[in-house]
Image 1 (cartoon, rainbow, N blue to C red):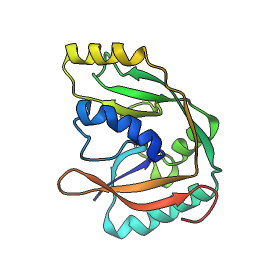
Image 2 (cartoon, rainbow, N blue to C red; image 1 turned 90 degrees about the horizontal axis):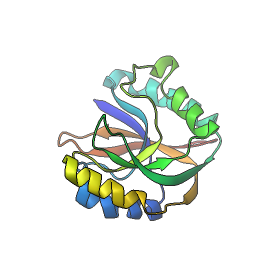
Image 3 (cartoon, helix red, strand yellow; image 1 turned 60 degrees about the horizontal axis):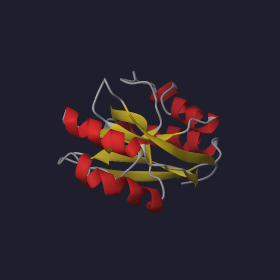
Image 4 (cartoon, rainbow, N blue to C red; image 1 turned 120 degrees about the horizontal axis):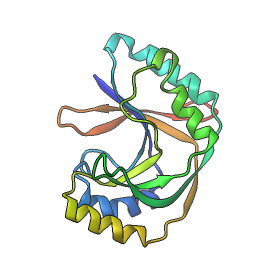
Length: 171
């Protein structure tokens, strides 16, 4: 089965992201706004308990940290994806690194850029128009991240939570 690991921000921030996603993100119906910590990976049913145990260990050794969303940006020219940028901090980078090393190691397709996607698969004109407008807006949102989620993909392509892991403690 296909799994992934993500942080779901507060409802307040999800509402801001969804106000854009419902119009500009082709994956709007498949997953709520999130920060991907580990790209999709396959796990055999027989290995799932070991993977969950490893993730619990990482979560217990990680302290809650601040998430600061501070700008709109894009992955252009690689793709017409628009996102809300999340400031890198030591704890977030360490968590992402731990979830992609050791027994959970896998080759990553992209360098980790903490973000929340708000638009993707847009044609060039719409992409440049929306990005230009958003870059004139100010976003400055800060919240404490104290948990992350292991997700699995359903047959229809949508993602749902398998388990939530609290930082610095038990799930």
